[in-house]
Length: 635
Figure 1 (cartoon, rainbow, N blue to C red):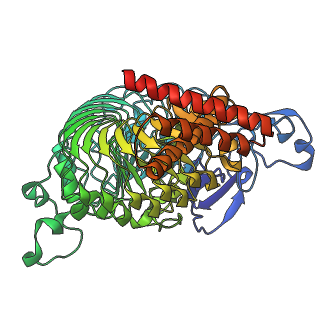
Figure 2: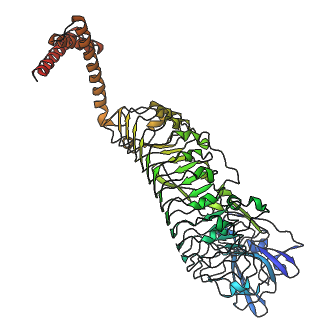
Figure 3: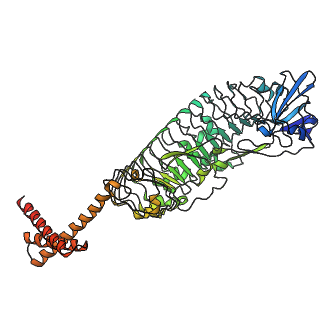
């Protein structure tokens, strides 16, 4: 363990990185080993001690005993790593031990203190940075903790199993970065300090409503997903001018979002000096870039709140109760959208053409709503889907959403335990950083009708296209064979007819195909790529299409051959009868006799039969044709 000292103020730093953090090194006047100032027993390991499997070092400091049990890397049971020295053990001190130092900052990530926050930290009131993440803490946070560290700017108790409730009011504190994610906290979300810039209390069991008057003018990142929070999203969100990332997913929120009209927006102060003549509503627009509200019970129309979010890039409203039509202003007021996910709501009406003017859009998910009408032909305007995927600029990439402070640079955003769930290849898959390279259109489970626009063949960057479970009809556009990046194509449960375009067999990236339950007909195209799909049950890609035949539908293979044969026979016969009728200049049973005889001879000869067989087939065909003609005459 290394220590940085200036007088009696010291800095302890584990040195290892947290789960998603990159910390800066802080300059100091001197660097010494821990044994220079920590009570005896905390010693720098030597070659001799490193060879030992376990060693107990008793020592005395005043009346307090200190034991350090050293379990070295040989049995891989070490619990603490530091930049300068390893102390791979469990620290146990008497509860009344008082350390002879005052810490300025301390990082005990992955150190095992036992069930609770150690009491000796109560004397460290000078700490400005404290991290005790992933330390195996189980008990409640002691009452003295909040007053002792009321002046701290960074408090990180994440990735433990801390239970109990938080104080209802923390406004007296000075914390700017407050990390409590992945614990077992219950109770309500407290009133937060005005100074807060980064809040992560996700993945707990917090319940109750959010405070109605959240006064947090400097808040930039707020992660409260995966709790049990109820009630509404407070109007005070309109007065969070610095907020860039908000995640309230997987809660029990109801009602809609506040509208954040001009009245609310004018109550906030712009972050820069703006002339009073320019104080329009747009001057007070919110800075939110990523907004995740999936899996709640939010309702109402498409949120007017979003009109104030000109910088919004990622929007996820899936699994809520929103309804009504999508507004025409969506492309004008949210022009930077990269992801628009409205899946599993009650939106209705036509898909507005304005959506196709979102030129940066890569992920469009409108599945499982009640949209009707046709698919807009202007899909070709989705310019981001025309080329292959390239990395987003860091300013547009929520996975690189950064928060920088004096002590650390945190990569927050969706990389912080958030998952982007997409329905791809017939299953729900979770994406993280790689989602920025994903290009997808999912319009499944709606009531869309009409044909697939042929312009869809211009979206060369598409990786996933799901139009299943609609009322779409007509032929599958042959230009879909141009989508060389396509990995998943689902057109099942529609009313498509005609043949399967042969170009689909040239899609070398395709790994999932579902054309089942349509009215497709003809022979299934073969090709190396199509033959590799669904090897466990390849026929399932085509079932529900009675007119299809060929591999991999073995039961219909013979029928396909016979159908082609008799179709050819019928065509030849019709042609022969028509020709004989034109030559003879009359229509009677003799045309059928002559046409049938000639057809039988021609077909038999094409099958490489001998002379006797050809004569026999000609006589048989003439007789059958004549008999059919007489039956038609009698009926």
